[in-house]
Length: 234
Image (cartoon, rainbow, N blue to C red; front, top):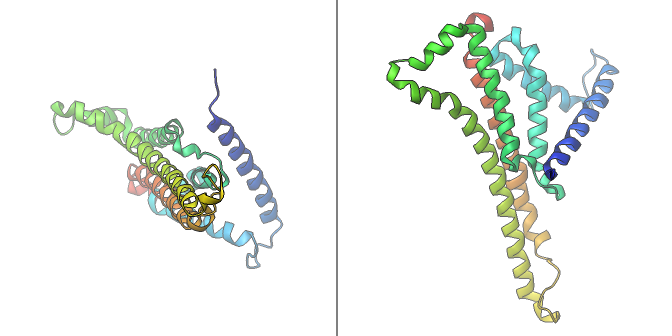
């Protein structure tokens, strides 16, 4: 059985993220808790605080400690997976199986919270609301979130990669058009790509990668938090 190249990319990203977490945690442990953070510790603290506040607003302080570590890792993993194409590596999130798995994790979390705070009886009864004839639509709706989240992330990252391939192809054609006369084959070095591509990379990889990460993580936090009773959030 042939192993997809994305598997090796995911393993590499996982090892990299794990190593960075260990290094940063040791650096934070050595930091004076009273002194103002500086250096690499400052953006890390700001990121953790921002994620923690977002989770608290949607899930409450009691549950924040349980969910924040996963949400932080989800943030970092998806963002790095989105922008890794900048280094000539295919983005794992341009693979539907990867984004679907991430969406399944979110979906399972939603179902867990629904059952935990609503009970099995209310969970199954919801499929018959407001009238039993709505059962097929309610079943479809139960899985629609998982499908839509996976397709949204997959589609945007895949389209960004395709757009950049078209840009490089157009740059090569433009380079050939301008200086093809100096080569017997009519093909020259793609010198237009370093001129035109960086700005588009900033949009299709960095900006779009950040936005898609923000959307996926925010949906995860909000959708899970919607099923947590208000009294638990206080």
